[in-house]
Amino acid sequence: MARPSIKEYLASNPGKVLVLDGGQGTELENRGIDVANPVWSTVPFISDSFWSDQSSKDRQIVKGMFNDFLAAGAEILMTTTYQTSFKSVSENTPIKTVEEYNVLLNHIVQFSRDCIGEEKFLIGCIGPWGAHVCAEFNGDYGEHPEKIDYYNYFKPQLDNFFQNDNLDLIAFETIPNIHELRAILSWDESILSKPFYIGLSVHENGLLRDGSTMIDVAELIKSIGDKINPNLLLLGINCVSFNHSADIMESIHKQLPNMPLIAYPNSGEVYDTVKKIWLPNSHPTFTWDAVVKRYIEAGARIIGGCCRTSPDDIKQITNAVKKYSNN
Ligand code: MET
Ligand SMILES: [Zn+2]
Image (cartoon, rainbow, N blue to C red):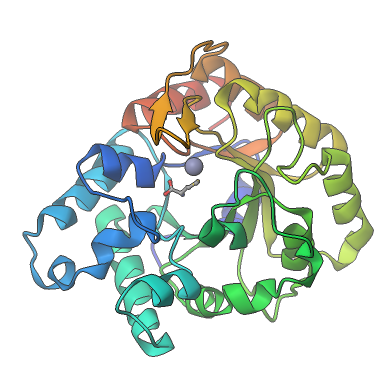
């Protein structure tokens, strides 16, 4: 294989910080794909013409997005599968069976691999349970979040991703609820059988969206002790406020000083859920240069951007990573 295992790579290059890509869903939207749909950025892949017509406009747009993130310095990139759970897909598209669903995921992963080439690392992106009920930014999982069958929800996507050699790392992204975090951490190597990470959805006040503290998160991880799944490579934050992201990283690092971290905040713009528009970051307190320096000091090994971050943001991250890491 052209790539080493990411676990070995991170272990044998302790000073290396990998640059991740940016916010794919919003980038596709900026480039003209209408993602206003329950399956969001999965939408271009649902149409047959995406696969049958090499010159399809959406196909060119997705390729162009990957090319521009690569040109900006991304070394590890994601599949556009945040809203591609079996539940979301089977309830909102003509794809109804697990067989058809596996074909879709295999196609998306292969297409993403073809776009980025054999050398770069590829992450299989999985959104949280809350993504299918728009709860990833409030953590509101109803009255009994402890009773939700998280495994059943994730299983079809996990079964597919964990057997796909094109994927180097699996992402559980934007996790807003501690019961969901507990469930993921309870799955052993027979379920999560290759490297994965967990990106937490954290409020700008530093609490997990459901109100749990970073101390609660750390206590949960410490309570598992050496029974922790050895495939858990990193913990971190994604789609959190840019302005508050370095503080949040430092608070996680303080609680879990030996845990390798990952950070990819959003652009700092704020989504107005009523008007359905992004409002500008009215008080940009920091630059990428400043936050990347702090992430690295807090133990970050992968750094990139989430919603509304573009290839230009990734370029700035690349420059800062070169400056502050021993790459
Ligand atoms: C709501 S956070 C979504 C992140 C996802 N990886 C994307 O940009 O497509
Ligand atoms: Zn995001």
